[in-house]
Image (cartoon, rainbow, N blue to C red; front, side):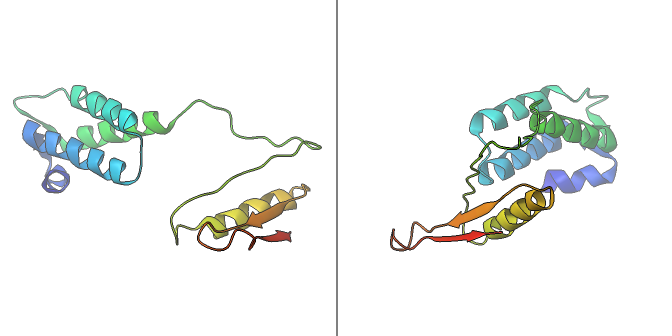
Length: 137
């Protein structure tokens, strides 16, 4: 955290930069980002800054972090485009309170507004297997 705070002070040294890279990596791992992706990001961030007299501009380092994280998230894959007449199943899983139900309802409502037929099936692994609910939007 010290590294992130020091980045707001104008210049950053190599030690603070390494602390910032480790802080970012730890946060990503806690968010269940794959370790190989985090390792790649760490390597790219460690090789990114061009140090001038043992310090570098905090603004330049912030831009470096933003560009590397953006590059990490940009998969170059085309977004899902539904085709009329073809069925698709979307599975949403996550921790309690993560917003799965809200996401599903918004997802189904969006495609319903575009003229697609949608349905939501809800089940819980913590309840009896026969207790499954279905609704059609």
